[in-house]
Length: 98
Image (tube, rainbow, N blue to C red; front, side, top):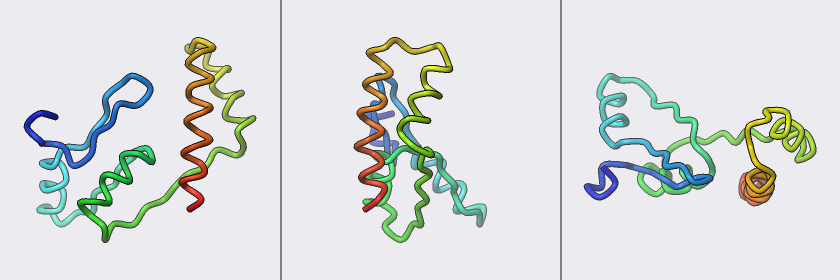
């Protein structure tokens, strides 16, 4: 689907691919509904290139300390992955403040 340009936005986030297909957006709009997407800041930036009239909402963690506690509390990530996510979060938070 990526090679056929079927996504309005897609990104490799933390080693996983995520995206929103153009068909999903068109079908939702055709049904006279408003698409509501749960996407990261990278996806939002790309999405806004195609749909600049869109409204966005950035949900911040209470603090980076709370975020770190939540990540560690899951018990599913390696230390390397936690550090990567925390670094990415700091960058995304600064973009969300713009």
